[in-house]
Image (cartoon, rainbow, N blue to C red):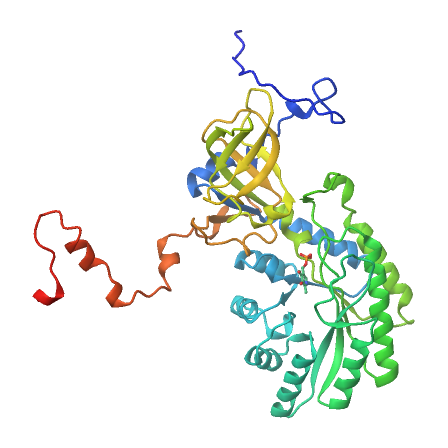
Length: 470
Ligand SMILES: Cc1ncc(COP(=O)(O)O)c(C=O)c1O
């Protein structure tokens, strides 16, 4: 059989890295022909490219896995779905079916949860800015409001006076759990005594009571013991409030922060090596919690995990639209999706798979998006074989923080589909078109261009009509 021609390439050997003399990655190929049993070809021919694809089975499997890691170690665990991670209705509905409360950080997210049918008392309302009308609604609907600062505390006191009743609230804390940089901008600082002062202030006001403590130490936490330190400090503070003011803290909310299996830019090791397992996180936290609680106490432990629940359940299918050789000699590909669509590319190095077998030697290549912007780079150095136009590249994991932070910028946002447990494919967000872009725009009548097009661009040779002639 005749061997297919392979274009020769010269690849610089890099000392210290594996090369063709030692198990080079140059010949590795990652082929992905289907997602959750549905062929990439089918998905794209029906829904276009780029295309976000979610797997319902993967979401539910992950929910069960993470939930059971904690609930097998502590008897009173509740998850709250962090809406900002992914607030597509279909995704939120799955999370709520799996038993999660809604964790929201704005009026918009609150509205979205309520519209979906989540009752107010199943909502946790966090965030540094809660307008008065949103607070009033949340109070009247029984949501758990976690106070971020003294001004909000004051707003809630005004509401309590107006409604002539005491309001139960949570206090958001920030603390040193050994994570650097420490997230100190949200809530009241514990170590400086700010949180204790806020509690005193709240008690003296006589309008509010504290039923929950909240703290989110950061995101993509790679150190399980940080959660042990966090929960110990939270429990100690809860007992301080109980002993000093007779308050009973029913909820200890440790926020989110569990990592997904993404690869952070600049990390040396692959996620399989650098990301601890969910069980390691659960073990540290639940162990510390059980040790620290007084006998018989069992407050509700709330987790607001975002990225760890959904990231690996999402893929982005893109298409190679063109290739070029840069003056430095580097191969570059232009894809139909860029940082506008895949916002997390600013800090993740994605797993990139090809939809077909491709012959040829791998070359370190750059992946550009379609924007006419220099920052639009999805990968600045990835070994790829020579790709022809039309080849699909599949990026993962992309389920977290993309379909919320994506931008309507230069291009329409693409379609999102969900592959159900039986392989059915449902569109859960239509691809955008011009109406999405212009729906809220208003063009003052004096700026309408129809007069312009029938006068100055008149191709019939007639004189432009000036308003004076009319
Ligand atoms: C208050 C709060 N809870 C939960 C989350 C979800 O975090 P993650 O996706 O790291 O789990 C965030 C994210 O920033 C947050 O601010």
